[in-house]
Amino acid sequence: MILPFVVAPLIARDLGPAERGLYGSAIAGLALAPVLFGMGLPLAVRREAARGDGGAAIRTAMWICAAMLLPAVGIGFLVARHMLPGLTSVGIAAFAIACGSAVLQTFGLCLQGCLVIEHRYAAIAVVQIAQSATMSLGAAGLWFADRMTVASLLVVFVASILATVIAAAAAARVSLRGARARPQPLLVESVSYAGSQIAETGSNTLIPLLAVLVIGGRESGYLAVAMTIASLAAVLANTLGVLGYRDAATRTGVELAEFCALIVRISLASAGLFALAMACLTPLLISTLFGEEYRPAIGPALVAVAGSILYVLNFATSQLLAAQGRGWSMTAAQVGGLVVGVTVFAAGAGWAGALWGAIAVLICRVVTAVACLRSLPRGASSFIPRLNDLPVAARAYVRGLPADA
Image (cartoon, rainbow, N blue to C red):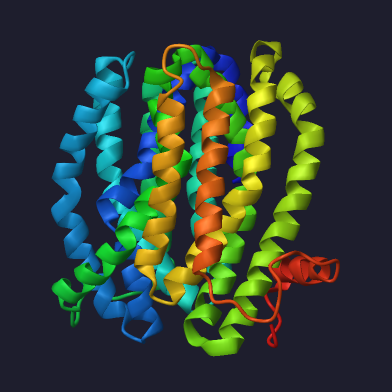
């Protein structure tokens, strides 16, 4: 997540607010695509891996993803034509191909699920760095060559997905030959997670995707910069999600309730400190890195940074629910938040700007957070962070959760 942030100012300055808004909407759509096409498949494969049959599930997932490749390209073409006004014909083609690559990304996420179960966190880091490094180096190369356009950035995006899948396949070392899991049970389980995953990703991407249509290109550019600043919290969210999943999948009763409470407190404590630091730095970061042209993004960015606390909490609690096989609880929480957030955002069509978009995202996350917390098992421990949670949080991010957590 850090490397793309480094080149984000280059992209914003070179494209300008209007083109940056168009690019932000395109990337938001591509972030939603692997979840939409995957239909919960990566989480279902991860559950199979936790049961000890990850290889068979991976081989089945490969054929499922292959069947979705061409339909994904077709859907990408339609989305580009009707939801991304301003894309050139080359840009439309690039977006359609990028949507096809999202299916490959789904398969890559399935492979990463096996790495999570095996606690191979160094390999996961390498896989994730492969994508961000390819994207960042490609964008920097376009900037140096003075060839940066929305279409060329989408081509770099496709290259980054290919790099990720290759790295994940090399790390997982799963033979593509051998017994395969029955597709029907795997798909049935994946569907129970699909709504939640789509809604969870949609809460972060659907409003930016619709921004060009609702608030216009320039304001969507400001919103994209605001969301970029807040997106640094994803480092915390992804780490906690990985750390909590396997332990939550193997615990029951009071032990599970206490573990869930610990993850909630760590999420709030670490994300709260992150948000406080980013709130102090945001005005300087936007003015210095992105330029005075993006100064109107400061207000939306402060709201987005506040919402990043709930983003970390929602991601961590969703993974806890997924580990317990409670896909429908995840779905209800995420869909509820998404529906409320998009409704609020759509109500501002014609008069609202980037600040309204950031507020809509915040409202979406508040609704989801309340629903997720109500779905978790409750024990004697409180969800409210304590001072002694900070050392535990620091240890978790550096060395993992203690054995007695």
